[in-house]
Amino acid sequence: KFLVTIQEPVVEIVHIVVRDSHKFDIINEAGKDLKQPYLESLQYEDDISSISNDDLIMSMLITFIPKKIIIHHEEKAHN
Image 1 (cartoon, rainbow, N blue to C red):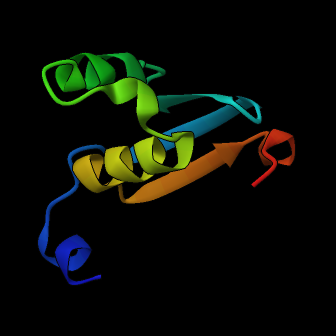
Image 2 (image 1 turned 45 degrees about the vertical axis):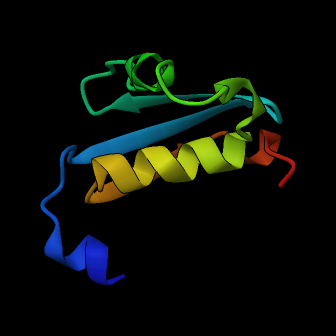
């Protein structure tokens, strides 16, 4: 909580669009994809294929520190 309160948001609004239990998109308020550029930035890290969707979403939210998070089609998520 402390980290979130001292950091300025990088993105005002993040939309998490659940496609099904294993697929999701993360876009900004203008509809720009945030997930693919983020994944590309991780390619230089360890093997990213082993990262769970939950961990990936949390990592992205910590990175972007949005003021508002909107989840679309959350009924499609199974966790």
